[in-house]
Length: 453
Image (cartoon, rainbow, N blue to C red; front, side, top):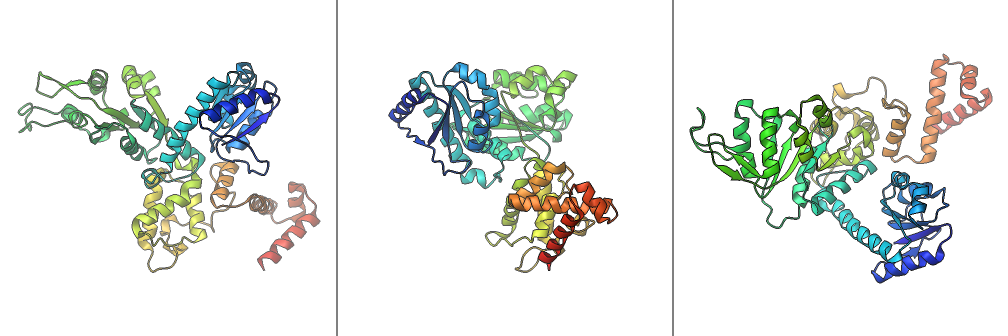
């Protein structure tokens, strides 16, 4: 682990580093030859450190690496805003005025985070929840931590197709209970209102016309394990009240029975709805919401993690082909990167499946394998042809592994092309729009043509 100092305080910082060494945590000064991110470390600062947020942002890679900002005192943290440093990418912000206390806190946090990151990198996670984008890694870190080190109920939010059931299964898998039993999944959208009580709580024989035998419900089956309620926002208010008793007191009655039964389980719920909005509108019980939302997590839609699309494509192809995954031509990958996915990851998976179904032979997947209805109306989707603006175009370029120089050249070429289109091919007017001379534009176009030839 590395450390770096901003401002005075060498004597104070030495005390912290010595205390860390006694805890078995060795810290080395950050080498100036290190890249922008150099793994986990400490940024030590005093009260006058106006650039500390920029350094946190750079050293952490906007939160990719675990970096703790340690201020000289609580006053130094207040002056530099601990919230601002967290937003810049710090994993935590601590006061270092008591070296022994600070060293204990630092060591404990890095010990926890090391275990979390080890699990995030494990095959049980990477084989099922694919992606390395910052948005996705941040979610996985949160999920892994609450799953392994907590026992609270979890509410997963996010659009349809973002992977909520996969995350629920991961929470159950990583749950540290020694005597953990099964995961029980109940989709609230498929429950028939007349039979909802039976689905949840079971029924006695003869309790209604078709009840020819006694039956256990989801709550009994989940006893000692995990109950996952998908789309809990679809539950009617009557059933919400009955569920509240189970969550709150761990007791329930079968339909047609007067005897109270007991059940203890971990509850994971998912919804695509704004449940807090539903609470305000009277469509969801407030008391139930705060019982099921002890910890909440929003799964990002695919448009916020386009960098993960190539890895997801390979993952879906591997499911079909095993280890012999065919290459994907750049034009096909460009299409997959640029396309919109209303159904998110599920939508991408279905499209990759349709492409793979058309593909034959041992060569790469080519444009001819793309179904006709999925082909772009014009040529390959352009760098600037992004529905979510310029930032989306840059995300697309980064997902294609383009460097800063290539991105700049693409942006310039796109601007020239669009300016010429809008000015009906007039080089002079296009140059005026772009703020360059006719000669400069001519030279650039000539160089471009020569490179293509």
